[in-house]
Amino acid sequence: MTDRPTARGDERPQAGGAGTPDKDVRHLVAPGPAVLDPAHLGDIEGAFGRIAVGEVGEHHTWRQRLLTLAAIVGPGIIVMVGDNDAGGVSTYAQAGQNYHTSLLWALLLLIPVLIVNQEMVVRLGAVTGVGHARLINERFGRGWGWFSVGDLFVLNFLTIVTEFIGISLAASYAGVSPYLAVPTAALCLVAITASGSFARWERAMFAFIAISMLQVPMFFLSHPRWGTIGANFVTPGVSGGMTSASVLLIIAIVGTTVAPWQLFFQQSNIVDKRITPRFISYERADTVIGSIVVVVGAAAIIVTADYAARGTGGFGHFTDAAGVAHLLARHSKVLGAIFAVVLFDASIVGASAVTLSTSYAFGDVFGIRHSLHRGFKDAKPFYLSYAAMVAVAAGIVLVPGAPLGLITTAVQALAGLLLPSASVFLLLLCNDREVLGPWCNRPWLNGLAAVIVGVLLVLSGTLMATTLFSHVDARAVFTYLAIGLAVGGLAGFLGTRFAARGRPANPVPTMSEREKMAWRMPPLALLAPVRWSPGLRLGILSLRAYLVLSAVLLVVKAVQLGALHHH
Image (cartoon, helix red, strand yellow):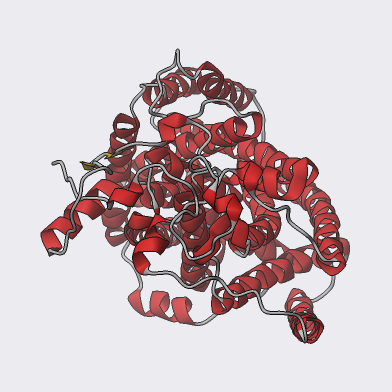
């Protein structure tokens, strides 16, 4: 099915701000949009349709809108389903096996977090035409850029390792040697990605997404306890009480459901798919659909793992995702097999998305061609970086004796700890008028995002305190930190408002909807530099120091849990 909804004539490559009421000379002399790779300009070619950007006309019927949505969907759904990867399956399974369904409430709270974070990168990608890593590098300097992208490279590589752990575990359950399954999966991933066709890659991802829908029958075969599930969704609590181990798992749930790599992947994938501001509303719908799919899938895994532990003596003794499949097989061999297939499928989608996120960032940072529209010969460094990460991660998994389950949980928790840093830079970019112009964040969205970052900081602070002082009450620590952060946040807000008194307002120039849809960020070299206040600089430095300390203590906690499990 091919859709040819039309773009306005001003959708063609043009100056970033030309045609707006703001007569800023930098916007008028911009030679074209800021895209770094010419392959990022042109028709939108999706798995379910194609949109020619140069045609003229408007679409108002529901059929036309649905056809347009079908052509646009992809980045949002793929990033969300990729988020329910091997690490996600393992983390949700651990929650179900060790804490029944008592942590379902955390998933419900994550829906607005997912939508808020990913909607911001939707706007950044469509309006700027530049990847997340490039924007951070150019707007905040190479020092901060390398801090942020360095975090991404390390975390993404470790995450890719967990994807191959999932492939290995699923293969072992089916009686297939990991030494056969892991290299075969690695070769398939490289072949799918380096096909030279964005649409072909996207169709392959949707084929794997269709397989992931096995989570729905898996849920119903697990004899869900509807009353308990409903209560756990709306009543926060932890089976057995809040401890440092449960806090670690909650952070891991946050980290695997709202991971930093998602910000980089979706923004770059939107740029690569050539989505422009005119289609932002469709990409927002794509993101909302994906966020609902990811939470439904996560809930299904938690419920299934809870069922797996019933009457088997497995409650509270999670080892890895394959262990859950074996427990399920005691109830039903079909259910055990479905779980193993879900794990394998999730690992493939996750490995593709996370590795591609890293390769996109690699292309951004080093200024090389990085588009799935290009063949291997036309973008060798891009595809070679992808293949190298896949090969090394696959090789590490084949090392015998590694504590695979613990590695997986620790990596997801690390993602949760690093998310506040990624979210802060995201917020700064979405309030940068040089970058987003009329598409900047509204005040209410900044407030909601600040609350999200605050909750993440409180969770990581609780983990730090319970790691350093193992006998403290985790619930009390969480409460005190939350109160302290709320008071500090309110004081900072009032101080900022007081300092802003008397300063001249700098409103965004008004423009018509047509002009807003045509507005693109000018080339990065033409943008005015970012000016940080001393308070903001101090805050960013403090956050960086805090997160480094958090990561070190996470390693300590993981080693402690590993030693306890070993004994």
